[in-house]
Image (cartoon, rainbow, N blue to C red; front, side, top):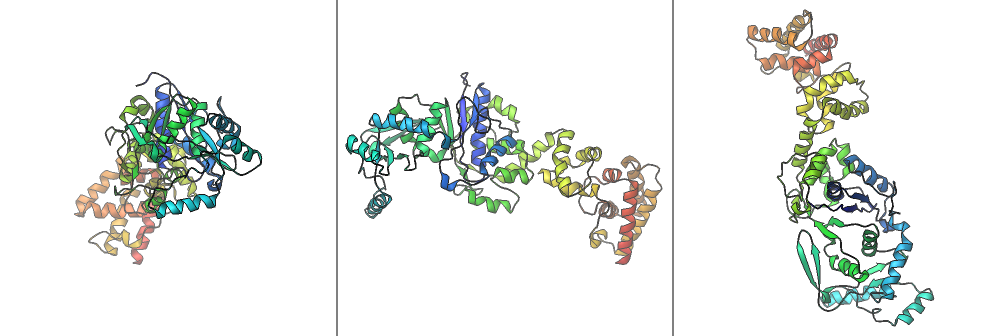
Length: 493
C-alpha cells in the first residue's frame, strides 16, 4: 500500500445515463484516495456539446452520492483546482496549446472535412489503416501563423514521432510498446476552440495534480498519444491503470449500454439510476462491481469502509469480467441482511408510501424481522408485506380451496379456524399457533391444507412471511374479518 496521498479523479461525460463502468472507476478512485489519505475529484468532460444530454450532469452527481462516493472537489462543490467543467477551462487549454505549437510539438491543420474524407476513402481502398496524411505537418510555421491570423478555420494536431517506438507503462499490463510509424497525428484542439479529450484530460490531470489515472481500457488505443503528449510538455507521468473490459453475462462480447434493455426485462440494469429504482442498495451494487476486476474472492462481502482497508491497485486484474446479475442479487440480499432493523425499515418505507399504503414506523419495525431473509431487492417488500397495511385483501377465490379438498370442505376449515381464533384471549402468535396445530392433529388434515387456507384468507396471497407472526401484526379484528370474508367467498363457489 502506498503511503503517499493519492489524488484521483472520475471524469464522466454528461452524454448519457451513469453506468456500471463509471461506477466501478469512481469506486476504485475513491478507495485509493481514501486509503492513502488523499483526495477524490469529480470532473466533467463536457466538450462534446453535440452529444450532451440535458439532465445527465445532475444524474452523475446524484449517482455518485447515492453510491456513497462523495468527492472532495467537483463542479457543484468547487475546490482549489477549478473550474471542474472542461467547457469553462478554454483559456487554460489555449495556453498549453500555444506552448506545444511554439515548441514544434503541435501544428495548425487547415485540412477540410472533405479533404480528410477523400484521403480516408483512398486509404481504405488501398487497404491501409486510415490516418492523417500529414498535409499540414510540415507547413512553414510563419505561413501557418498568418493563415490563423487571417481567420482561416483550423484545428491543432499533435506532431507524433515517426521513428522508433513509444513505450507506455500500464500498472496492470506492464510496458506497452508501439511502433511510432503506426501512430497518428491526433487533433488536440477543434475548430470551435474546444479541446478534444486527449488534450483536455492530460492538461487537467496535470493542473489538478492527479497522481493515478484510473480509467477504462477503451483508452489503451490512444495511450501512446497521451504519454507522448505528457513527455512533450516535460511533465511527470501519473500512474496509469486501464481497467478490465465488461463482458455480456454470456461471456461473449463486450457489454454495452444497449444490452441494458434486455437486462431490464429480468429486473436488472447497468445504469445506476435504474439500479436505485429497481430496489438495489448502494452497498450491494458497490460490492458487486468492486469484484469485477479486483482479484479477490468472488463472494467476498465488504462494506465501503472494509473495501478502503483492503484495496490495492496491485490486486486489480486486466482480465475481462462477465457481468453476472445473479451475483448482484446475491450481494444485494446479503447486505440487506446486514442492515439494522431501523435502517432497513427506513429504506423500505418509501415503497409502501408510493403505493399509497398507510404505513406506520412501529408496525414496520415488527415486520422487518419477518421479511428480511426473503428480500433480494428493497422493492420485494411489497410482495411480502403490503397486505399488512391494507384494510382489506382480495384473495383469488380458487386459491382459498386447499389441495385435495373442495370449496365446501375448505369453507368448513375456515369456519373452524375462525371459531378457534375468535375464542382466544390473546392474538399473539404464541397463543394462536398451538390451538390451530391441535386442530390439525385432531382433524387428520394436512397442515398445508389448514394453514394454506388461513394464509390466503388473512394475507390475500399463497406466499407470505410466517403465518402466525403475520396474523399477530395484522391484528385480531382485521384477521377475523378477512377470514369471514373468505368463508363467504368459499360458500359462493
